[in-house]
Image (cartoon, rainbow, N blue to C red; front, side):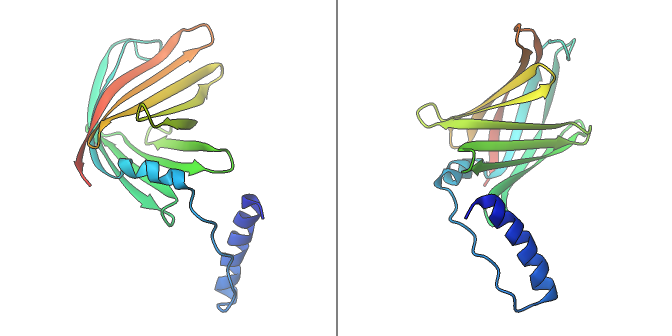
Length: 178
């Protein structure tokens, strides 16, 4: 049975359970083992970032904040609640999608900006590399590399096909608690 069908059936089953409390709901499929890779993101993290000079950032900007990350929806997704010290807030959702055989990432912030990326894990390099389209003709590559269990480095670079850089963010994250 395909996952789209199960999703529709799950929604319909939830509606039936409200109307008919004795209704039997379908059983969830097994969790993909790739979700275990994401366990390393759980906890509260402090970030320090630098947005270098680029097309969308005419002068260098430094910012910091926290990200509190937890499992949601029966441990199939992670929700990251992001708070910049300067007041911007965001929510990131991260999971592994077995249908697409890729990690998936959605980001939303209080400026009204959203982003979607897909990516792959490199066990040898301890790196999750995500790619997505941020604007017409502009692609972002985000690389999150774990240096150890409590420290990771991040690069986030958006550029067009000609190589013009629109956004270049570099930073580090340090785990504050699990």
